[in-house]
Structure formats: structure tokens, C-alpha cells
Image (tube, rainbow, N blue to C red):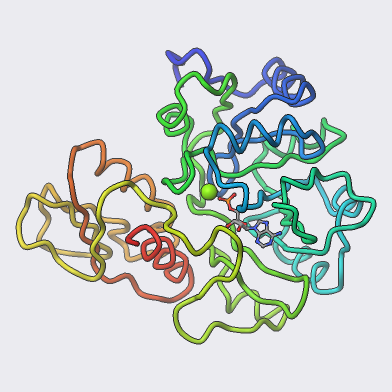
Length: 315
Ligand code: AMP
Ligand code: MG
């Protein structure tokens, strides 16, 4: 990308060093991951964690995900168990977050986990964040790089739109391939899914038996009940707009294509639809639409995660 934004950097040796130094100083850097872009800070530094909550305007009750290079580093802070290793082997590095019991000796700043005795950990796959993690001797606390309750950013310009020059370093790692947040699995007790993601409940259930949600996922994790993932516009689900003034998010092949129709995936590919979800919602907002209608999205595989985000965005 030709960089007209002085705080967006392409990734090279020089900007790797710049990011690493900044993180070591307790500053916040925006980094690409395969799920969405994050706001990263030293998970062992009180000042860094404070900055993350302040910049995002995130409620203190909503804990952060801590990112590690591998299980070896995570082992310093959390109690790794059998179920963890089964899922780690299958899905990591990748778009899955584990809730585990915090070790007494853990150096994670307690405000990063909202003073809970559990910690959410993840091993991101994106080359940029992995290279940075490998260069550090501390893990990175990293929520999505957006103002609290809004849409997650999926490219560096989205991050810029959210914070302008408030973040001094945004690393350009291209468009986030997955485009929605990680699957969150609680392994601190009986395994259960707290947030669906591209790795579906069925996929996880094949490796570790989880308590499968009956109907709508009622999530009992801090920060997950409120409105979230919102584009800041009213959203009406499973309904067609009555006129062309409103945006209509559709899925699959449709013969009637109008300017106010935004297709998540013409091929009816749910993975593609997930990757396009936030991109499309940002586009609709930029075009000035005041209301969004959404057609029915199949509630299987990645569709479960898409419907979860849409439901919470519509609250
Ligand atoms: P985000 O940073 O926006 O990707 O959100 C991280 C999600 O992980 C939040 O919804 C948190 O509620 C959840 N989370 C983080 N840490 C914990 C924890 N210790 N226990 C339960 N949920 C957690
Ligand atoms: Mg978020």
C-alpha cells in the first residue's frame, strides 16, 4: 500500500524493531492478525494495559485476550490441561482462544483479566504478530483495534478510521483473512464455547466434548451480554427492506441485484461471508445508509458465528 497515512507502516526489519521497541516501552501498537486487527500492549505492564482500556474506552469488566508465540510461554501464566493440548495440537496457531486458570506465579497484570482467576490466551497465526511475539520476552494483551462495542477492523485503514493518529504505529498486514473474532472456548471447567468463531462448535466437539448450546448462545462471560460488534446503525434481521433507501445484506446467488444490496458471498460460502461481514458493514456506513436489513444466513458452521455477531450488533 502506498502510505499516505504516516502512522501506517508496511512490515520489514525496521518496522519490526520499531514495534518491538515501542511495546517494550509500554506503548500500544496496532497489529494485524488472521482474525481482526488488534491493539497490542505488554501484558506484564500496568501502564500498557491501562492505555489499552483508555484508548478503546473499554469497560474494565471486559477482560483482554493474551497472545503468545507458543504454549511454552503461556505455561508461565496459566495451567495448561489435557483438553488444551488436544485443541492446541489441532488448531494452533490459529483463530481459537482458551480460557484457563491463572497460575499463582503469573505476571499478567490483574486488570488485563478484569481481576478474574482465569485468563484468555491465544496463539495467532499471522506472520507479523508471530514474528513480533518471537522477539519479545512477554506476551501481548490485544483486544480488537476499535472503540468498545463497535465493529472490528479488518485492515489498517479501518484502524486508522477508528483512532486516526492516536495510535502511533499501525502495521499493515493486509486484509484479515478470517475477518471475525476468534472462537472462545472455556477450558477452566467443563469445556464450553463462550463465543462462536470460524472454528465451529462441531469441529471442536470432535476433539474435546463440549457442552453444546441448545438454542441461542446465551453467553455468560464478562462483556459478552451487552451490545457489541455494532456498526452504529439500526439492524433488522431476517427481513427485506420495504424500499431502496435502506441497505440490504444478502447471501448467496440472487437474481435481483440493486445498489442497496450487499452480498456477503455470491457463492453461498459461509467462510467468505464471515470474512466480508465487517468489511460490508463499514462500507454501508460510509455510503451513508441509516438502517441495515439482513436476509437469513444459514446457521451452520461459520454461519453460527455470523449470526451471533449480527444478533449482538442488532441489540
Ligand atoms: P475481544 O478482545 O473483543 O476479542 O474480546 C475478548 C473476549 O474474550 C471478550 O468477549 C471477553 O469477555 C472474553 N474473555 C477474555 N478473558 C476472559 C476470561 N478470563 N473469562 C471469560 N471470558 C474472557
Ligand atoms: Mg472486540
